[in-house]
Length: 60
Image 1 (cartoon, rainbow, N blue to C red):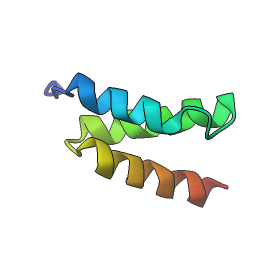
Image 2 (cartoon, one colour; image 1 turned 120 degrees about the vertical axis):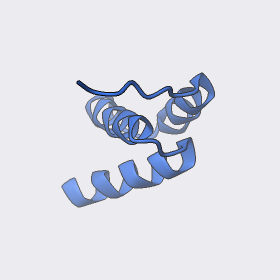
Image 3 (cartoon, rainbow, N blue to C red; image 1 turned 180 degrees about the horizontal axis):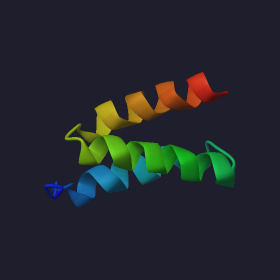
Image 4 (tube, one colour; image 1 turned 180 degrees about the vertical axis):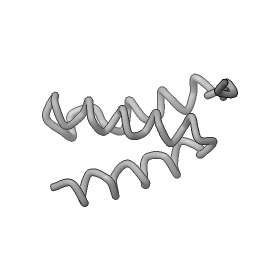
């Protein structure tokens, strides 16, 4: 059984605003998925964005 992790709406909003008009639609979706994964793991918005960006650059 997985423990539920509360993610503040402001974190999600920051992630969405950061990714807007930066990536193609497909890349943005993958970036948002990656950010949400890190948010669920307990990272804050800034850390999640940085980690997702690393994932994005590695996958290029």
